[in-house]
Structure formats: structure tokens, C-alpha cells
Image 1 (cartoon, rainbow, N blue to C red):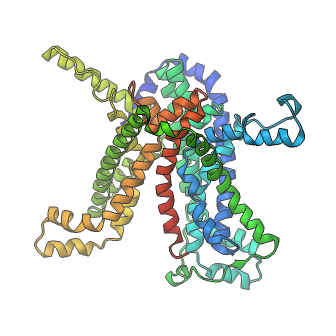
Image 2 (image 1 turned 135 degrees about the horizontal axis):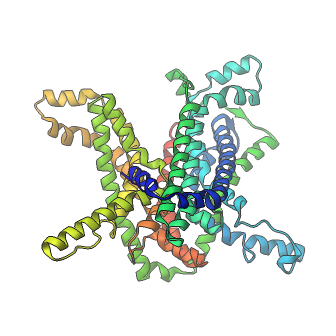
Image 3 (image 1 turned 90 degrees about the horizontal axis):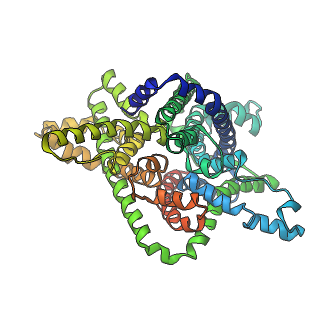
Length: 524
């Protein structure tokens, strides 16, 4: 429905609006969006693949430690990292203060320092928090490859670097493309970081055109441009993985304790530095900056405004998690019990929402909900003499709806993986013992699926808690979540005040990051 709503509104606009966008808005925003995506994709690929290969194929000090902590930047939304880096590299921040102290500079005119509020700064922020997507995908594949292919290449005379570039990296290309596509989608989805850093991307252009310039049709037409982007990304990802499937024997893939390439001398310390730097930049620095502000504002943790925003966030996230998990289970169980192509196609379409940026999704959700509210209000006023107001678009329902559409893919993936581990013979045995379909569902399937259901619900809960792009556009008046509270303070250049809700978001985001780390360490 959101996609059809966007296409319908865009087609109803006049040619003048589209001409204005094509001449004045799209060229500049499109250029910056492409540059941001290209540089971020290149940087995350370099960091993610390098770190994944080092912890999987090499032996050096603290290897197991880095294998776990390299995923920690997943706990930080990009907008929180942007606020932290803005303070860290600001004129009054620790970096420039140290430069002035060491070299004796007095004012900004005495020296040159890179501006964090630029395209380069946005690339730094996006890379710092998004490289774990590439790292996780490649890390898993490098582990599954085992040592057989690499050992065969070594016996044929290939050195370590040649083995990596000619054997291991080509075999990891499907996973690399999946991780890189996620990076591109998250880069395209962000609005808080790019606005704070002054980078006018297509996503921010939608926000600016709709709210600041009052042109809904123009915003929708820009949203169509982003939908084209998403479709192109998905096609490229699938084409890149075409005929790129590799399999290993189970015994080979299970040998995770095989002999790794032992690094010596400067090489081992270079590996330590290569793994430590992403964690330092992507997690330690933002947490220290925001944490130092939060420690000085301990009474703010009990302020009524924060408690209200926290309560609202928990309620919205909890409802979204329940709805998303329920719908995801229905989708996965339908595909499991009915293997027809139609059902699989519908399930795939239902999980398409993750690829749509939150800003675009907000428009596609708000317009049909507002139309229904207006129609229903007119009906009740004509027949009953009173109007109920905006019962869907004017409440938290719109946020729950948008977040459910966006994160149902995450829940469906976890639940589907859990269902695949359940033998269909369980259902057959239960039915043979006299249970009907409903009893089999409640007494057999759901109890065995409880870990997957809880994991799916937890991930959706945390992602909804961090979501900003859709929430900032769909929230009613006087409706604040933790993310919007951080956004409001940071947009007024009050990052110190935003540190308290930011730390709560980071702590919540650590939960899935720690779960991923523990799952990676099993069998390492």
C-alpha cells in the first residue's frame, strides 16, 4: 500500500513541480547521494573484508577479542555517531584543542583542519557504524570455507595474498554483495546524520521539500527517485550473486580450528591496528563523547520529559515487535505448509519494506491513513453528529505501521531460519497422535520455535527504538520517543543535553550486538 500510494500521488502532480525538482533539487541531491553511497561502500568493503579475513584466516594477538568486538558499532545509529563526531572534531573538541596545544596555534585562522560537517565527514560517520554489515557477512563465509580450497591453492604455489584475492575473496563475493547492499540501503535511509553534517542527500531533500517547503507532491516525486534506487540496488545485488554459489563438504567447513596463517613481526601488530582502529572510531570514541556528557547530567535520567519519551519508545517498540513477529510467523508458517510459487511470491513481497527508506515509507503510510481518517470523520459527523478526529494518522498507530512494514523482514528471516530447523515429521507425528492443526501449533511448533520468536522480537524492538527517519515525520504533536528527543536537542546544537537519551539507545543497541558476538564466537 505505501508503494502504490507514492506512485499514485506522484502521477497526480503537475509537470511544473517535476520540472523544478529536475532542474534545481535532484541534480545536486543525486550527486551527493551517489558520492556518499560510493565512498561509503568502498570504505566499508575495505574495512569489513580486511577485518573478516584477518580474524578468520590469520593468527595474531587478541584475535578472538577483536572477532567479538568488531560488531559493536552496530549498537550506534548513524545519527548518534554524527553528533558525537561533531563534538569530537569541533573547534572546542579534544582533537583540535590538542592540535592548538602542541603547535601553539591560537585561532582557527592559524591552521587548517578538515571540516567534519562535509561529505567526507558523512562518509567517515557512515563507514564507522555500517562496516559491520560487510564484516559479518564475509566473516561467516570465510569460516564456512574451511581450509581445503586455500590449502589446495597453497600446494599449487600460491602465496597468502594470491590465495586471498584469487580463491577466498571470489568465493565470498555473494555474501559481500549482501552486506554491501545493506550498507547502501542504510546510507540511503539516514536522515539525522546527513542533516546534522550538512549533506543534502535525496532523503533529506524529501524531508526538506515536504516540511520546510510545504510540497507533498514534490516530496513524493523525490520518493519515486529513491524507489528506483532501491530497485536498481536489488537487481544489481541479485545479478552479482548469479552463478556464484559455492559449497564445501560438511567435514571441511566444520574444521574451524585448522592451522591459521601465523603473523609475525610487524605484520601481527599491523593486524592488531587494522582491527582496533574500526572499533576505536566506530564505538569507543562516540561512547566516550556521549558518555562524558551523560555522566555530568545524571539528574536528567529521572526527568519527566525523558521518562515520558522512554515510556513512549518502549510502548511503540513493544507493540511493533508483537505485531511484526505475529505477522512474520504467519508468513513463514504459510510458506512452510504451502510450497506454491504464489505463496512464496507473496511472502517475498510482504518483506520488501526493509529496502524502503523510512522517509519514503512515512509518506506512503501517512497519505492513505490520513485519507481514511478524513473519510471516517466525515462519515461519523454526517450520520452521528460528531467527529473522532485523526484516529490512525494522528496517533502512534502510523509509527507502529511504518516500523512493522520496515522491520518485518528482520523478524521473518529469524523465524524462517528457526522453522527450517524443525522437521516436518514433528507436525506429522503430532497429527498421528490425535492433535488437530491448532493443537499442533500451540503444543509443538510454538514451544520449539520460542528462541527464534524471542530473538526476532528483540531485534525488531531494538531497531524500532532506534528508528528516526519514519518517526520524525509520522509522530503526532507532543509525541516524543528517545530518537526524536535526541534529534530535537541535536538540531538545536545541544548535543550535551541529547547525550542522556542517546546513551539509553546505545545500551539497548548493545543487546543484539552482544548476541551476534556470542554466536560468532561459538566454534571460532
